[in-house]
Length: 328
Ligand code: ACO
Image 1: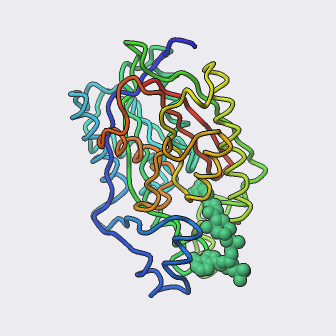
Image 2: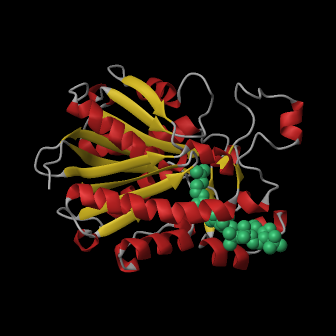
Image 3: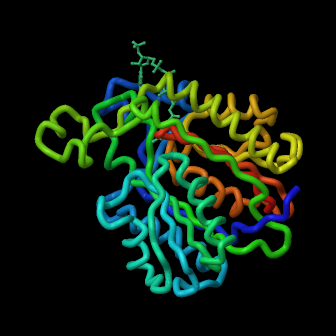
């Protein structure tokens, strides 16, 4: 087992105040609480209000991790934000976050890997620390997905929610930290999960809003199968790189997209469900933010204890997928 180069130091998260239940959805769309619960495990999700921008949620999560670590924004040399639902396309969400946090000594940029974004961002942060480009990297995953989902499409609208999670990545000090990672993408499958319009190829116009191509489109069944196989493969690869077996893992914190995907991934990985952290029932799929929010919650409720070995895994648009093994 290699000695970690970088560790995750402290956690933070923010989820919006507004809770939207399945029953409320069934009043807007041809769906039901029973269908959503049975097919996804989701009971409710959080929806950001007008005063809860992506930047505001990211800031709240960042402030929590700064308080946790007793750092100030000035102690951070890099701000890395994972998001696929930024407040605006230019500049990056990270630059907006840097400005409102006052992280004046940092370089700031976004990582775009959809639901896998937090794990990709941890890899980037580890690299910055290893190259001595930064002592403290603020990694934030923040999503306002409800602003880019089609509220009239029952096949996607019921799945998503908003929120943000954060951590600080710094040089490993006491054997704690990232033991291994595995990242992979397959851009040939992009159109199974994507936003067709709104970018430079199809700039915003009236047609875009009319045909709903501004919003997330997903071939659910294909994504489901790929998510299970890819996350299971990523877990195997990350475990092998760490020289560990599934039995060595104390807690799996997977991307929270669907309880059936989580259960199938855990089964493939050879982990019982009592070693898997689940909060998809309360937050739905918060894309990049999902593992970061779940990690913060698991730390704060005592489910994560010093000395534990954690494994994260995620899958998202791209397709992108990844797994990271961490000594806590
Ligand atoms: N309420 C009621 N019925 C519905 C709903 C709904 N909300 N949504 C779909 N249905 C219907 C369909 O129209 C279909 O009806 P039909 O048989 O008459 O055609 C039927 O239910 C079955 O549809 P499926 O798509 O086969 O349902 P499935 O069991 O696959 O569940 C789901 C759909 C929940 C989307 C699932 O496929 C899934 O979770 N996919 C993966 C999502 C995911 O992991 N995304 C991760 C990345 S997200 C990101 O990167 C931003």
